[in-house]
Image (cartoon, rainbow, N blue to C red; front, side, top):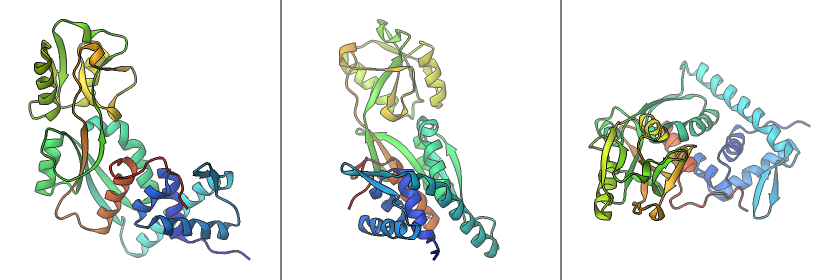
Length: 296
């Protein structure tokens, strides 16, 4: 006898497949870890196949589990399209998200692709800008949600969801870092990383000059990769072809970088909750254990 599949169970299953963790999936779909585990046991009973297999203290998808992923995506999409059609709406929701371009090309493709597969009826409009401008847009209500970057020396607004090292970086194939007067490629005067990097070099007694200024991370990357200057980037924003500089190269240790999640006062609907929980689960590392794929 065939059994109907539960859309809610499929959403949870797809969240696990996309985020790689029962714990993170629970955060994204607003369920406890025990509730997630129970849903997956019931889903296995419904499909009549084992979809997870133990791998040490973790779990991974079986071959049948991997097959189920695409079916789950199609069923969730059809379910949401059907509800949207009969609600007389083209979309279930529309959210405006702001992200610093330091992270846009490194984090957004996989994070937003996963969000779209989990929530195909929520349209996300993305604006890339500097953290100070994104903070102001949140204050004015022109953005719903924003990810902003900061450092230990700066005033933090919003919920800190990730913390990672901030590094001096140079091109692997060039030696801009060996010059007597270090040439820097930095953000504009409003950029906190600009101020703290210059202060750090002043305290270390290193001579420098700012050769390139841009609010675009892509422009700064270009200057570094061409061997024209060095810059400062957080760990997850470092590109291929870059090398981290440390005290052995004569560069002082920099403060850590905090990534905060900001939300406007008017962004209080369920779709905003859904996006915020997904961002926290997908990129957060503060107060969570990453790498857990299943927990009993």
